[in-house]
Image (cartoon, rainbow over all chains, first blue to last red; front, side, top):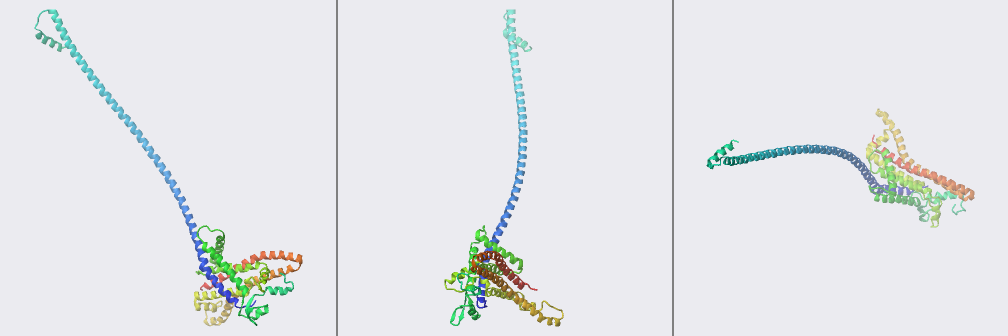
Length: 156
Length: 286
């Protein structure tokens, strides 16, 4: 238990070890720990942000779905309307076509009637002439009589 | 008693409390052959065992922690790195609690003190006879393996702390501020004449207080470790007293060693905290 140079030796080695610790140990370890702390904090932040983003995205998805449904409903409605319109149009066209056909048929019928009348008139005239010829049994100037009979037929 | 049955009890204790001292003997430079010769060497001698164990343990601390520091990354820490980071964080927290200035040297110093002093104290748990007995075959006759039971070691560290207290006091407060702190406290007066009369009293009180810091710091550690070592030596003496006494001694040694784990950790922690507190006081500017 004598105080001697050991004291000085210990003092110097103490200072050396402090210097060594600061220079080569403390800075590196504390640096790594702080960096890790920051990393973890960043990670937690990112996780928070991600969950918030997820929530937002879900909300957005729901909104978009709703919008899409609305759009689809609008499209269907429009399509229905259009279909009705097309059916109406088709009905209109069909009716017009029917009318036209009816008119054409009537016209043809009238024409046929006229022609039949004409033919009938003609036949009547011929018949009348033949009859008259037979009745009179005389030579009559056929062309004069013809005119006469034609006039008669026209008045029928 | 490790085979030295011819020794008496007091010789055994004396033997265990003698350092391996290198210095100038009557026959030139060499190792002291007994405690008296070691004492006669005076200041110009070195306790080779204390200093070697102390520096060796300091190297163990430095290299282990350097190894951990090299591998330290911001990734997931494993194994030994976890352990080192736990200690570093503990020391860092303690320093942040008691030291409020800004000084990058304080925390590494606290870590060095804590781990180094702990390792030195830990040597106390190795049974007292093992290493001296082994070394006696190599011709080394004295060996104290616990550096902190040597007042040179503890007071050496305390003196370094004292030097730092003086350095930072003067650096932070200036010479005038530091002297003023010593001379104008704790008694002060508005009247300059009475103030002047108080100065000698203040100086006496404050200088005693200042000097008490390193001495209490060094002697506290030394006293605790010395007493613990002494009890281990006394228990070890029981092994020479027959089977029954030896078995009782074994139980006692186990009990004291378990209790001592607490003491060595606590003393290392106290040395660290007091150093930090003293330096914190040195940084405070009134």
